[in-house]
Image (cartoon, rainbow, N blue to C red; front, side, top):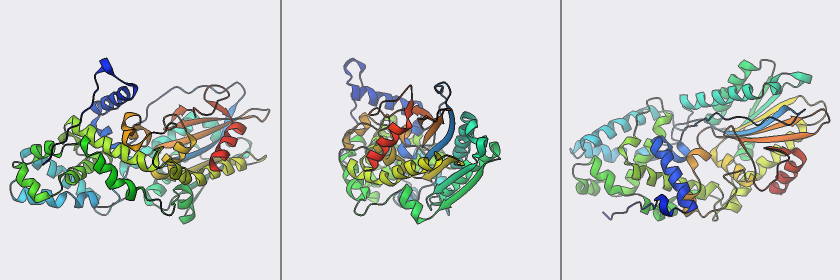
Length: 423
């Protein structure tokens, strides 16, 4: 088997900005190996101070888009690519003690997936409950029913994990805001709105094999074969495609923390392999749905319906006498990431080649399970409107667009900017 080695020049004495950023990402994974899961990583909330609104401004409306919470794998393809081989090698006595332990953990994750592919997990529901509760705690005035504003509108894609995320989020919110009137809609119309499909745009066709093959230099299957097999060369003959086999085991390790059984499967990967597998998944996802030089224009097309919906719904909420309190949208990473990329929020505002994304961008923090964009609208007695953006519940800005003060945008300015992006 040809050996590939992950070569990362991380010495601080000669560190470029890109290398320094990669060092930061590596340190984050070293601190918590679960973060090597890329966009399969569970949601990590970090408490932070909120910048007070300018004097006289009070929050009154929220526009929101959330990815569903933690979930199971959407199908059995990763299991199909490694479980039969593990079973065969086990029956032939080829598994080492570590290999036997890995196989037992994989079986536990596999068993829990039965009948649950693509569904929200317990952890996913808890993530959405917590986000809904914190939203109320941060902006209770929005849900006070003052001036007769009580209508909370919800839209979800037709996928179970998104619909159930919507219910967990709103159930938690309703416990604190019983005066609110909640409505819910879903359907193919809303799937097209929240996660637009563009004819001829299938990132997997362009990037799945191409990106993965080109990035094979970041991982070394030999390392794992030597750890989990007594006779690595014999095991390779039985398996055939060592890269795909180890890659599939990594995908089981990535999803495991989202399940109820949660065996620690990342521990079987040495740190260099955790980082290498993260690089491959990180760059693949950036290629297809973020600000990659290769696909940015098509990614922007996915965001257009959501941008138009944000502006249109906000216009309705700002009408005199409107009773609309919030518009909550529940979809997928393939809808949210194109949205925040096209908006150019901090961390998504620069374009890189897919093959260098890991030097600048961390999917584990930028698009984990339950990641979300919140736009909080404020108004004063003179009728002036300000908007604050929060991404994953942290204040953020659009570097290309000047704020009025602190993290607060003038709504007419932000509205014009969003309309321009949609056009």
